[in-house]
Image 1 (cartoon, rainbow, N blue to C red):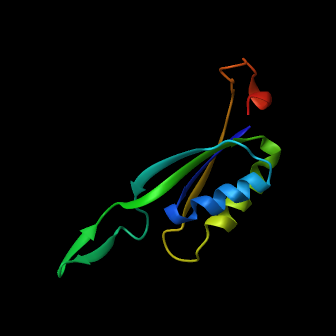
Image 2: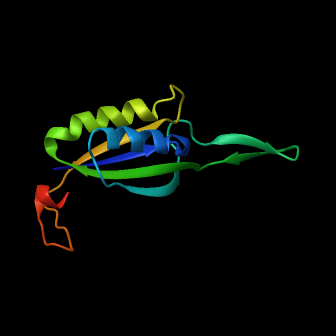
Length: 112
């Protein structure tokens, strides 16, 4: 089992969700987060005054998948979240040692 964590632009969330649903993946966690990467924030002008925005709004998606589906899920996220511009985000993949569904007690792959 793998845990895929993707940090993407907020307006790409629906496209990513639809791509993962098309693969047959059901269930993901979404958090609104702020951060920056190579773009180091951005400069904006408000009422004629220029100011710096150091942390940009992003969305963090977490989805647990069987190991054999990880590459397809990563590819789906990458294609759906891509705008070709700086700040598109990152995808991180980690191993999951154990999963338990609280309601039924199912474990590992059955718990996903």
